[in-house]
Length: 102
Image (cartoon, rainbow, N blue to C red):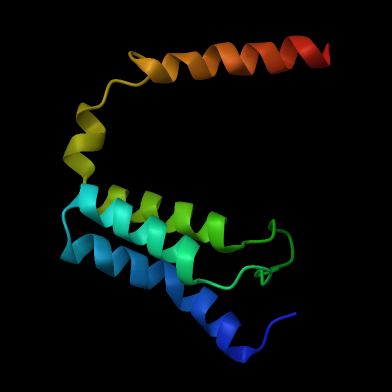
């Protein structure tokens, strides 16, 4: 269990991360936000809202990067062509998981 300061840091981390995206270029913003969240947010404290999964520091780092990129880098996201490069291997990984379960 965490104290009030750790919950406060987790609560303000996403708006702070989005603000860093606005201040920096999207590439540098993603690096700074993700690494600083992983390094400086509390480890075992999570935000447990009813009906939602627990949000720890890795989930909040990913969420802040996603929201910041959607806010600042809209043009790059629209120009991206999904599943045309190495990320196509994710489909193979997903299919392997489904076949394993069946």
